[in-house]
Length: 248
Length: 308
Image (cartoon, rainbow over all chains, first blue to last red; front, top):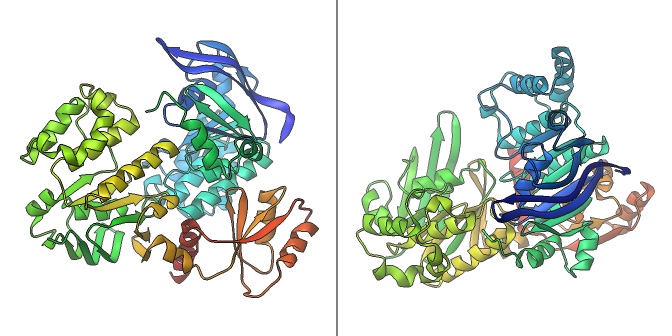
């Protein structure tokens, strides 16, 4: 992690829908290569904030830059410099492994030659060379998730947003997934991740916890546990989230 | 009538995918029973078979002393089923949904209020809201009320807590404990290993096979190996280094520490500590710990992979 380089800067972010404030004065920074856990109960405002950071939705007010690009004026550049993956949407089921890689590489402006060169390396690394021409729908969930992550960082983005990437995955595969996250982080890619698994909160360099649209806690897992006098992150999360008013 | 469930040699395939491979399971009347496993393990197939929505390829299924295939109409009155996907009518209001399900089962809400009362009071303030406009937690409570309105003997809940945050998950399990006290047999599927401890007994399931059936305490007792938690200034680097260590049997990231088992039965902790110190790790803490369900699940699933 390089603490001198900030790849996400959020200052006084507000997002209002009518008289409902989904994001209420968020301010935080994320460093290059940091694994940043973005936690909160359902309805706390995480998805709203992620959409803004990915350039898909305008904030109501605030100064926000991602990968050095302004979320108001430089959305297209911003989108080219981030990756995104979620459990709900990742790869096209009716395209093959190679077609998916080709498609995403193309979307992010890579040339066919670049894509082909990198594809072989990727398939070797994931041990998926034998499935190159298989449709995504025929792969086990664990492989899909690993491939989806690799595709999300295929164009070597500054940041990758992972929205509950490991939901429903078996415990061994879930850990293999975190191996990929650590590798990417060591290669300098910033990881912005949401999860409902509190053990995964422990794997993050820093964790923020949102309650009712505000960031109520932000620190390393160790310091949060000290601050809330808790044995693990589960207890930290519960003691904060129980205070929430916007409970779903 | 005994509200238990007996499953004998049950198999189900979809084309060349073997979703369930010769499953045997005996769930007792009044039990709170967990089916614990990842996506693709076969949990939903098992629930659909029990709910008379699918036919088995082979094997026997009995519920409340009644054959699930031959007497499916009887079975449908005996069980309440909450599918994993929200399946109520989004364009009916909360109260309309509940009335609908009551009428389908030829009964009235008022006659069954004692059964759903504790859950109903939490959603009653929103009774005129469209079901589609409810938040996740409220939908879940309404679905539970609708599954209970005909006073079933057996309740099947397919992943009721998936995608739900830790606070709501906790509340949901408290509701189930309340229902259990009314004598209903409850079968719950979940991918969250930590929820096993909320059940009296659990079946650990992966790739269509049951790895083990037992009480959570006994599953943990049968782990059979000494387990160590290892903390340091850089857990990920320790993980990479321990994978190269000669005596490692298994090593996994586990929250704030690593969980480690050794191939040897007799060894000194100091040896591991020295190894990691030589690799440059600081602030090392190594202690023997009690395994959890997730440790057991991983150990069992690795073993079952090696058999294949």
